[in-house]
Image (cartoon, rainbow, N blue to C red; front, top):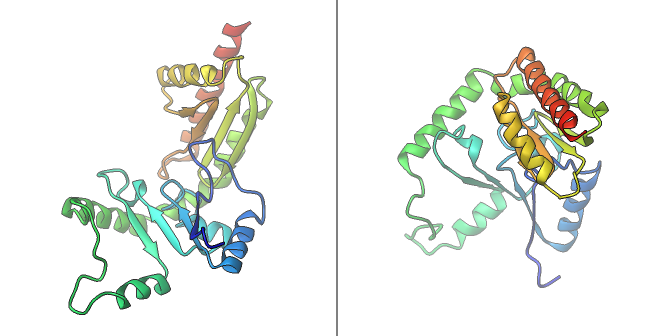
Length: 234
């Protein structure tokens, strides 16, 4: 409609517990956007740069957005940096509309194109390519997901969702939403495992340089902490 310009979406919702879209969901959104002349924007701050076992989620789901936002792994977290990728059509529309002899995109921030951030980004991309980091993630995906899904038999586990090198483990509430997850985050930390919990959803996202033994260690410590929590609640 006349009041809509774009659809902004995470291909896989991260902080809410790795919510993987149903088959055909993103394709349908792309179809709707095309039908009504809307831009499709993928927020790939979490899913970008190998987390899906592909460079970006757009390759994983074979859906092409008009705009991709990115950050975090752009510099491997070494220094804050964000970026935006657009289609040729959007880029040309902006540059062709610019006044002659003027800056094409007359907008920016104080720290745009910060030299240190750009240097970190370039170095990071070279390492990704030269050391086959994305390929490592893709090769480890099945082993990682099988290991995480082995936790499904635990009485405290309500649901497990995963794709690529990212999984969400949801635990049953103890009656107060988020309390169990908050305690598990603390307990897992003291057991040598850093897992981000949002409410009762834990997000497991190993480094791409991990090996199978590290995946086994992660899942083992995860299960042990769940066992300790269950025993304490009896």
